[in-house]
Image 1 (cartoon, rainbow, N blue to C red):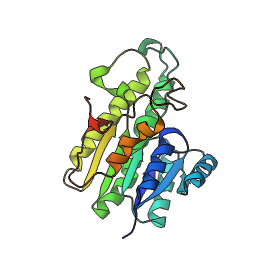
Image 2: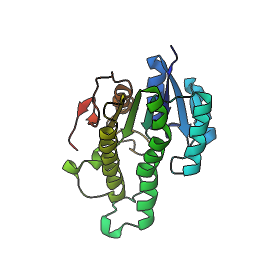
Image 3: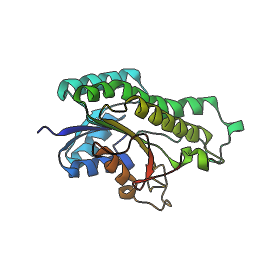
Length: 230
């Protein structure tokens, strides 16, 4: 049986890289590691013995070129992990002093990017009657825990969760499961050295959601493989 094809965005380092590592070890999955910087992506992919391809999720042209390549090279997509994301809010930022450019940059990557990838790759999943879409969100996007600071980042992750819920409802019964996950506060370039969680811990729930059985959950928000409030 052909291996399932998994696409991971923003994967040359951090949580995305670890997700690729865990998927590649799982067996039965062929990983495509994508990165905005093609050279960094190639270097990362060689460490894991997986495929790589340049991809800027905020660029319609880049996403279209990638989707065309994937369709030609593999003819399928079984797993999409929308991991690429940015935290552009300055330290201590507040809504009233935030810049519109920060909001646009953040939403382009954290919301529009996953939407472009969904538009491009879910049709391939539909052809195969199988798919797993995993949106890497954040606890900072939880309305139940919403607080002060990083307003553009928070809003982008809340919107990503709304996209998750809507898409999951639209694809109900199609064989395609769509979920959001929170990796927690992880020691990465974004999370910082003082974060309490390892990248292995942060990536684990993505692996679980990417390999759910057909009767697995859809339209949920998870951390450490357990549902959390929206």
